[in-house]
Image (cartoon, rainbow, N blue to C red):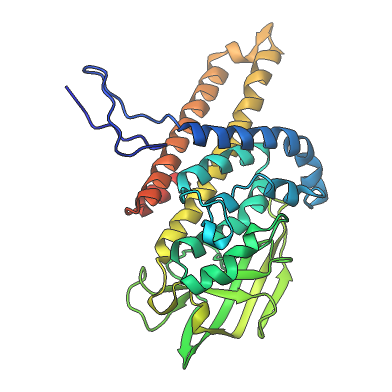
Length: 345
């Protein structure tokens, strides 16, 4: 019997056969494995040893952002005509790299990759003018801060029920609302603000994205409180009070952009961070269970502990496959919302 095998980490059209026991392949390509290895080695060398101090001091290690930028994870997927390396856009590759960085430390990983959500949204949905104006900023040797402004203050945040509004007035859009937990907002040159267009119908169709400069009139940036486990990540809140944005800075121009795919990409990124962190926890707990002796034997030999570690390993692998599935769907341009939701839960 012959099956079409979907390789979530490589050629989607490849066919592999092995008699009657064909399986879906999750094997990364050589290029993906090289970038994963590079990110893993960077996390081990530049992140794990400094993560505790960074968390206690609630600050990024000096020089960390420039060092992480040198990995080229963002510039690699920017088109050559805009100054980048010209690799095809690959949400799957980004998820793989983000997991490895989050294994080093989630706060540092999120800081390092925060500009990617801004830059890749421009690559995927921006007009040619927007690509020409903004993408070269991310092709310099030094780290360039920019950020996605999506989350809003309050419990049970729902990205499809935003309170930040965008109203068209002539050739300008007027943004009003508040955003919270915006990474790198203290230094970002630009924000990609997700807002609700009250004139559009349907919760999933009334979202718009706007490129807002940090010195825009009516925009106030204020430092927000630190989050448990992410104290090293610089975050701030945005207060948009009648901020005027030109029609040219609406993502995608007159046609707008596919905002749902941006939300899905953010969910996949968050899930990849969770996988990396969970893997670090497991790799810390497993040796401890073999070394910690209680009642004359290692606690890892007791079923209650051994089963917990086994369940952790199973759940982490399941999380990773869901992340890769959602990222693969994004890469193929098919509906990824369900998979992205499942991966981030």
